[in-house]
Length: 290
Image (cartoon, rainbow, N blue to C red; front, side, top):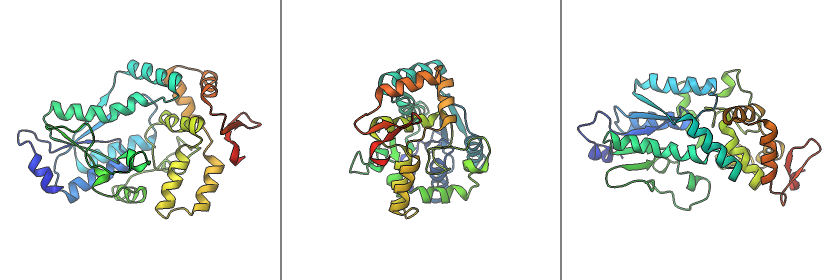
């Protein structure tokens, strides 16, 4: 990879590559390894913002990443009203609220790389492979072309939550537990997807349609990585996979301009009643885990 980066470099650009970052543990690890292991001296960091309330941990970690390596950061804020309109549309029509902004997370760093004639863009994990949609852990994102290569860093360095957290902590990465602004519920950890609050609704709405969300995703990974036993993961899924974090829900509704009553009514329309049922408190739960 070191040789590839050098061979692709545009000598007319001060940047060897673009790295899409959030400030989370994975982007910290990518930047750290590019600099320490692959000889990259000046990557351009691109952060695509959403409109949700940032967590204190998220603000700290992005600032810390930039200061630790003394790098240029481009904060790309998509037009806020477009964000709201697209998020509302996907929420009401598909219960897939962040479909649009997640596409921008990949699209904007590539657009910026092309605009500055930077030949390589690094992204994190190949999510299609990590979550079982694809059996092949491809190195290049489908958006790659002859001008710009978009590379999944997780296909070069085997992706692991444990490894990323260890690397990030070496540069003083902070978790939600280091701050007092968000005691998150319905989650398996305090160190993944911690940058903004309302973003978590993208994960929770999966539970309504498919019967699992972020807790299941992470618990399964933690079993594979030896952090949890199978029995511990099953118990955590039963106890908390159904929980909708109240602060994330409040932030999501505030951001797109709806009431929590409208949120609940929309969720009810999409609820998969083949596998879910409401409990005595009005919460959607898996029938087989009640």
